[in-house]
Length: 328
Image (cartoon, rainbow, N blue to C red; front, side, top):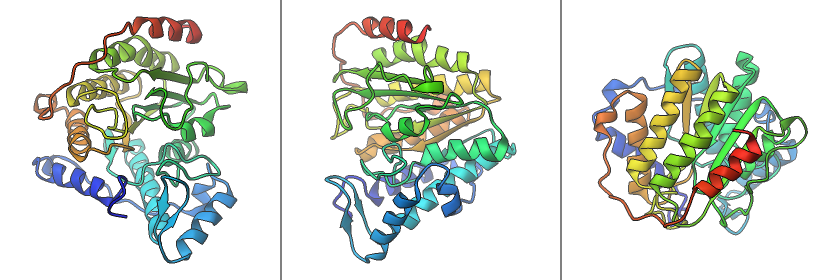
């Protein structure tokens, strides 16, 4: 649906921005594939997949909930998005590339094992984490989600799993209404879910502190063998669906911290998969800057959109609470 905020236009802008950057000659393009139904069952229920298939077979656009839609091609495209991230896992784990970025849609972090929601049909990054574990025997995988919305679907998949560290920074209150600081996992998974809900107006300096004090130390303590980024750029101050004040410069700094953490912890193995971002300039420049970071070309990072003053409040109260809860 071209008039919907989550449409092919988003990906087209990202591809166009990267093509015009001159970087394509410096990257290795990895051929994607379509994820099989059996692979999707690593995370999703058969009932969920059957429902998506039935809706696609209906042959015309359909509304799943108040903000999520499907067209006849949606299920196949979603399977290709998942398979594309699988291909990047293969490339990184087989040392064809050191790191990778997936420019894909639809996003995935809201999709639960049994439900499509929040523009998301399949849980792209959760599936890729499971694929990495099963295909390559990884014992510890980390997912860092800097989309403005809480990755409730990803959290649901791993809520009882101590082999996957899930860290989410997100605006609160905001859709989907989950991600409270006290949601830390259940059963064996207690302590491997770290939710960092922030107020409207939170900006670059706040995020720098949160990453330096919470996110990066948590990664070092967990020692993942592979890091995923759920790379949503809707925390940018220009995004129409939220009210945070990250700039492209701020986003790039977070990308640099995560890239360096991967270098320090897991031989540089890091994969960023595109999630939300509904201002196409912020999204496309954000993805391009992330690519530059992964290529070691930080000097080329650009921020033509500028910055907006962040809300004035003491972020250290949240830092202290998180350190107390998670013993950081």
